[in-house]
Length: 218
Image (cartoon, rainbow, N blue to C red; front, side, top):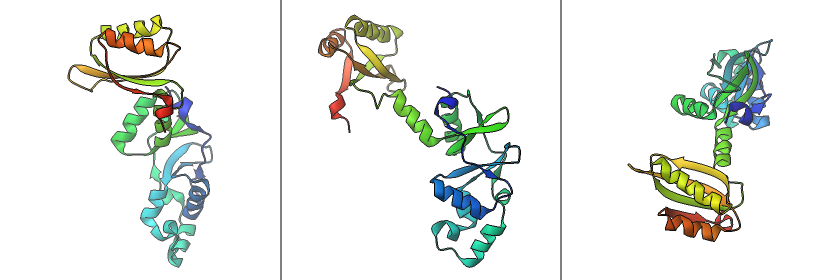
């Protein structure tokens, strides 16, 4: 999966010469936590977050609005408090690369550039939605967890059994660090012969850890 499939396109941004007060109002009105900062050519020059504003003007964010801070917010430009030259990603950056960078650098969102121009923003919420998609959270069917060895043959044997019974796979994930010599394979499957499929899996030696029907999920 790539960034372009999950990012927010044409994100709300703010010009470098606009005031901190304008940035704070924009963040509040749109219920967002960060704003890319752009120049006249819509080239990314920085990023400003609600936390940045809170760090320098807490009363403006919490609503107590001390007079002197309101004046400061109106007379101070975004350029003075933004993070300049922020980390960014490209449209075809793999989503797992983005997640790794966010975790490493402790950031909640990254602008997306195409040939230097701001075209989107990818946030931790987008990563979470992608994770749900991979796990098939919104799909129907049965969720089955199986403990298998790290031998490739075990995995292919399971696929063979599912194929034999005409079972469709809607989502698949593998936890490779489940155990020293084991992996946790999770599938969301659907078919007319699921009971016979589960019996065949057990007969083949597969250890089924947990079965969850669609109706069991919140």
